[in-house]
Length: 546
Ligand code: SF4
Image (cartoon, rainbow, N blue to C red; front, side, top):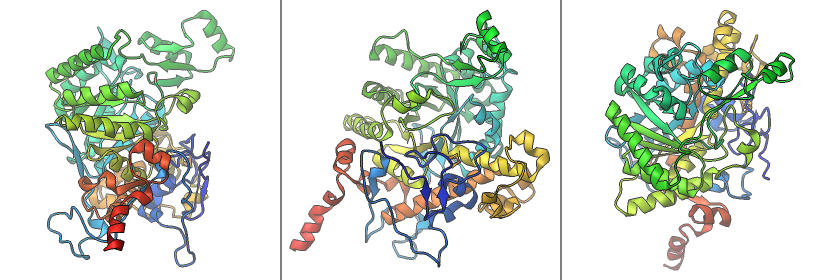
């Protein structure tokens, strides 16, 4: 197995735990005192694109050995002449073709277009408690930056305050809080997407959302995710809450209604319960049957009034991938998110996460191939978002290029959560009276933060950008976690602009698969992206033989 380095001396970053392909630790903690690249980028923003201690150092890449098939073994092309996709109003001159002028705006959708300022989509942040605890930071941050954020499954079902009568929601404070928090700063960029699994569908989430919000909300059908191939799970430590969830219709394991389980809980032998969702389509035995059911569901949602409908699928095998692509395309959906194995979550069985499903690079490579089959038949392929273990700007570039021209967004799950809890920890340490409400984990600023300052404007490189956007008076209402999100997104955006400028592409939509090459033959075979020295080899020989 490949070992990913724990420390990066050039950037001055260290992972708290064991890093995985994304660069994040396998176990990412909300109380982490630092300091991986994502954690640092949430404070320092675009400064984290460069090695530390400029003027006193020189630095060289350690990443020139490429083993195995993974995203790390795609490398990014650069050219020594030309400029493509120069935004309107600019010329091809060297003064205009500078990286800050690269246009990162994207849009997705069949008839109704949804715009985003950067090509980023959040993972589905659902009923897992960490999503609820730091939601304000996530949602305000996404709205300020202008990228779509997804409310994951089961939010209504686990909310003790929600009221479900005769199988229909009549009240759901938590789901409303999730949507309202985003809409507070929504300025026409990004979107709020609400996901539905089996239980949500039964509870009438779609009906409730359209009644309350009309088409301000995008509704998402959920087939799966990269981290597990069973439904969403959470862990609860109260017997009474476990029984409440069981009564709500969830599978709760072990069963909290059994006397022997209650006895074991009282004696401490059982300390928690796992709440599971149901698998979908269990009564269907063929792809045709799934298609019919899926089309009916889409038709029903359209009948309710939804103008934008998306689908999320996980790292299932090739048949399911083809089904997702074909059905979503035929149904004229607005986005299909394809989440590969390697991504993570709050609660998935560990060995399942380690060993099930199709790793992202394999899944995304076949996605491109299958989308091409549909396109060659003259179909307008559904807009795509690729995810699963992505956390940096180079990951975004590679995922967008690998699936070009079909990919419009790159999904980040765990990475975009780090600024949320880091900012909340800082806010709680600086303002002890707010700590509990913010779910802050720190009593005082740790040295890794204090070295940058003692106040938000000293700590977050993006503070004054946010202030410029919302106004000085409004700053007191913006959670630090959202400022951290803005700061992190600024690093991603600047880094992506630099990579695109180097590839001589000044508009995101001009990115192609030609802007990548494969660092080894295995990666070439899996991705269909040619090997490094084969790319433009003909052009090279023409020059030499002229
Ligand atoms: S923020 Fe998470 S991924 Fe980064 S070092 Fe801390 S625990 Fe690891």
